[in-house]
Image (cartoon, rainbow, N blue to C red; front, side, top):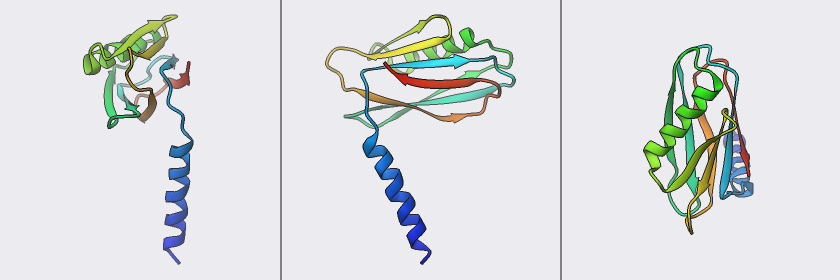
Length: 123
C-alpha cells in the first residue's frame, strides 16, 4: 500500500520530463535586488549529454543588472565558447547554442538568495 503513492509520484515526474521540450535559446530574466547573500544554481542539460550545474554567488544588495552579469560570467566560465551567453536589456541573460550543438534545457535547481525572482523562458 505504501508503494502506490511513491510509484505515482515517480510516474508523474517522468511524465513531466517526457513533456519538457528543449530549446536552442533561453532567456533568464532577473527581477528585484538581492536582500541577502546567497546562490543561484542553474542546470544546463543538453539533449545529448549529462546536465551541468553552474553555481552563481550573489552578494547582498546586488541589483538585477549586476546579478545578470554574474550569471553571464559564471556560465561563460563554466562553458567557455560552447554557448553564446550575453546580457540583454541589462537584467536578462540570453543563452544560445552554437553551431550544430544539441538543444538544451535550463532550470533553476537551487536559490538561496532572498528577494530575487529569476524566470526562464524559451526563445
